[in-house]
Image (cartoon, rainbow, N blue to C red):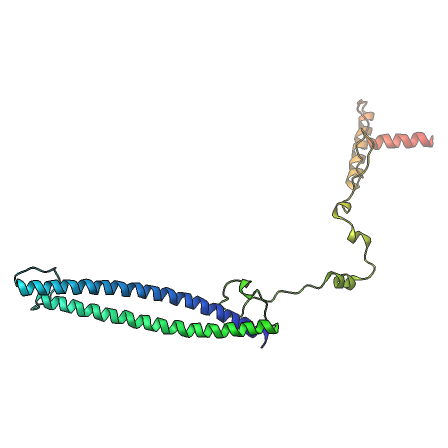
Length: 233
């Protein structure tokens, strides 16, 4: 008996339980309809008895209105209604008998499936919490098997023996530290190619302004060139 067969048996068992519940509800509905039909039958029998006595005593007495057929007396109409009620009761009783037979057969099959599942549990083929897996699966195959993950020790061994030490460090230690700057001094950003081009353009503008005798603040590029000249001199 394989695990797939056990899953199929468990799914069939849940399906049988759902079917039993539906049949129980149908049986209850048929029982209610049968009780209503019996009450109607008793009421019609009482009306028929009273009407028969009144007709015997007073042929001109009135009876509850009905839909008599052409050429049919009121007593014949009541008799016909009584026969219809008897026929309806027989139909409900037939339905009840069929439901009872179906319930008995399903209970027997459910008992057999329960015995098979208990035997499978004793042999260790099925988990004990089989009913907690969820509702019935329409495909009848049960839940998909969960993927088994390798243990942490095996995963570490597969990666390599010399694993870097930062793998075991806490996450807060792995964050990049902020650069330390002196108090009151802003951190200087590392210049790129665009910054160098900008500095050169500003330096050329400062040179042109000096030639035109325009007193403006020198750029950092011009200041660096002047500092180099002073050092060389």
